[in-house]
Length: 424
Image (cartoon, rainbow, N blue to C red):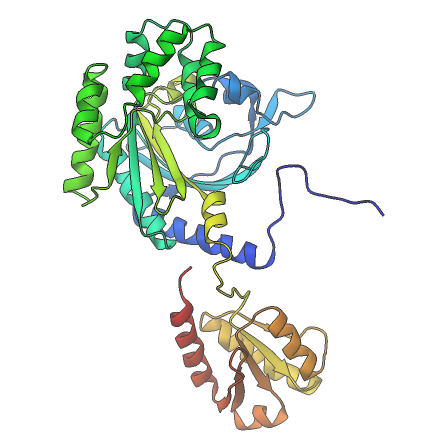
């Protein structure tokens, strides 16, 4: 028999995984909406020239191209946004979110798939650093909603990085150097040195570059003092973000990290990552890309952030909580009870709860086994006697306890249970 597997670097999500991911995404979406962001949906397929216009050679090599066409699957959500706003007339600033899949044809590894989900938020039309601060504060709120308590925000600026490279008089290798530096966590210092050397940069220049970018742990004031030597404007933007985060949002766990790069070639200003505590690493990242929309038409300042949904899901998965597809399973003794079960289900759904009825005419024992297998927390047992009396047997399938109550009390019990387990 043929073995029909998913393509390499892609996977199915069903059962508890699918339910949990949906909850996560809904939590993130609600935070974005609370902050006044509106949805935007762009095509999964774009013209290759659109995708490659400002993204660099490495991304061009990672595209999933459609054979015999000049089309490919998007590699992120930002290019489609930039193309859209370049041709649209809208009130500024325009604040949008998108939660959707993207694809990159790179070697799969732990935490990195070829098909992955992104939860992006962007602000278009404002060059003010209040935008960066808002995106970071909002993302911290979203992460807290998902149960992550401790964060560290890392800040840098492409203007500073470009100034450092320019000061060393390294020519025609800027993008290659930035791509190599972005791989520091994967290939280490020696790996970075080898990649930069391959661009015909002298070893002495490489050593000097790394000495500037990675001078050891420094306080923000000292890091900014160093940064000002290479870009007064870039350092000033970081100081502005730090000030807004501290005094407007009460966020102080922010570090200026001159080795932070962010690999995409379209970034032009501040770049940032959010790392979760406990050695978890980066769970969100983004930056300013003021020139990207101009590639497609009308130039607009813009900045965005993306939450790493796949990484967040992997970190939260397997924490022991039981996840059910619905609140209650209605159990019937026989076919005569089915009409009553349907009416009870209608009342339960109208009250905002989810429920299932048996669709196979099974015995009570088999229906209960099914409910347990699906990890449904409650069973509501309905027979001829229950239909006449209006009292139903509500069974807690975890404890095994059972009580006979009316439908309104059933709803109260379901509400209490929801409040206890609410959240991720």
